[in-house]
Image 1 (cartoon, rainbow, N blue to C red):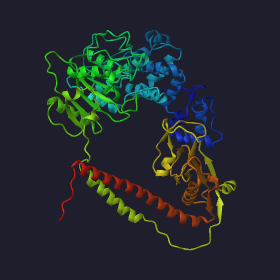
Image 2 (tube, rainbow, N blue to C red):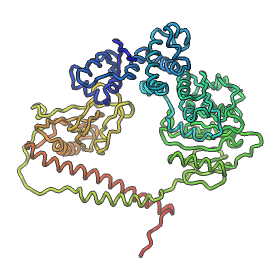
Image 3 (cartoon, rainbow, N blue to C red):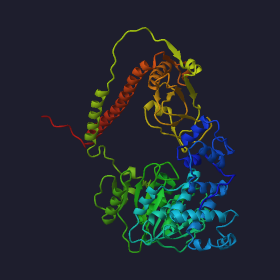
Image 4 (cartoon, rainbow, N blue to C red):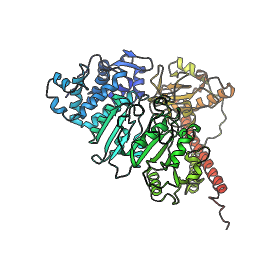
Length: 639
């Protein structure tokens, strides 16, 4: 089925990039270079909206588009049929319609009959046509692929609003569930990520979930249904409005909200779920832990993603103590930074088991460092379950309960795990890397001959720009470079000769560099200039110099700009900026420039290898020093 274009439909710069199959930087470049590129028709200066019809016509005229992708065109219709506040509701209703078992037969009727049969999913006049268009694509591509497409596009459009647990962390949490479990519960299931990971073998697991946002709950149910997972997801706040008061699941997985003040402390003070103590007002996570335990069968498992502060906050030590004393807490796993969608701090996993009558109180709690592979973490857990007192491998340790029950009741794994100063074979690998780089340096050492000559005849870049032989473009002084969808080259990237590491949004005044352009760092005392080899958007405190290839070799320009930057940096205060227009270039023929440019390129490769050799040397020195001090290494015997 062909999806029709709506005249009023609008698209973002990111949408245009997907339609044309290019990166966001290319769209920014088109806006700057082509005067006939469509003007924004709405949005904001930092996030403009364009007419889909005008963009489609322009792309076709430029030969950059032959046919609009059906799924992308459908998404534009979906996005233009609801404002930001109601977009998730529409996406969830379309997903639920795709997952509806009788949708095929229902769509053979009139629109009014479809609306009458699906009253919860059809709330607007455009909903049934959208359901028909979505169903047609789902028939061609499969229901699961279509629902995931809608979810992915929504998550991308609202990346700051969607806090979805990563598939990697979800799979790790699900891997702790015992194979014999047949029912898994998530009381804060979001869009269903944990339940999807737990139900990777459809037909074996019944997934039960609750989510406080109705549209999110509907979307989670649809994502589970199209995968063939037997599921029931109810809307509502699990703490203040338990949707499954009598549920006793084999396993409970949960990634709860962190640090919620209004979780219901006053109204839930006497709640029977608090078997391990009333959670403090500022410790909402401990309320979620006890809610999960209350919904696990006796002997059932609980895995909860926790903020690191929950392991040692003074206010929660009584509850932590009771979790240990009753044998409910079995392990704490330290995850790397970024593993939790709620926070950039490195989170923990708490592995718990609801005590059963007749259980012996465990004598140890397992502490695991999960910076290694997932397999090693699961292996350590299974080994601990089989024999809690068995000696564990590196990265984990069974800590006696008595060592945890002090005044602090600190459950932070790093406190109990001694990191090895030297990894197996680490010193040998570091030494081999250093020797290899030393040999590479010998081959890259630049050579030049002494040849006294008259001083160069120089021209400033400002003069050359006025003559039209090059262009100079300054990037904005202030830009956000730590978050956003766009990859940015930062001044530090230029200085270190590395790939772009900045992230930003589509702000006004963005500068896009292309192959052959020269980028110069204009702030601070560190001189830096380099030739760009692929299209990239520039961050703040940079200047772009675009030399005409008929007059200049870009590596020649970059080499002499480094000299100018160094001279300028020696005379500037820390707060000053280099004036690129005052930098000077020798007046040389293009052939002569290329001779200089080749040496400058060799110098750049030499400096890069020198930096890597320096890093390798520092690593080797640190490993040997730490290894000798810890007793893991000893001096090589003489003779």
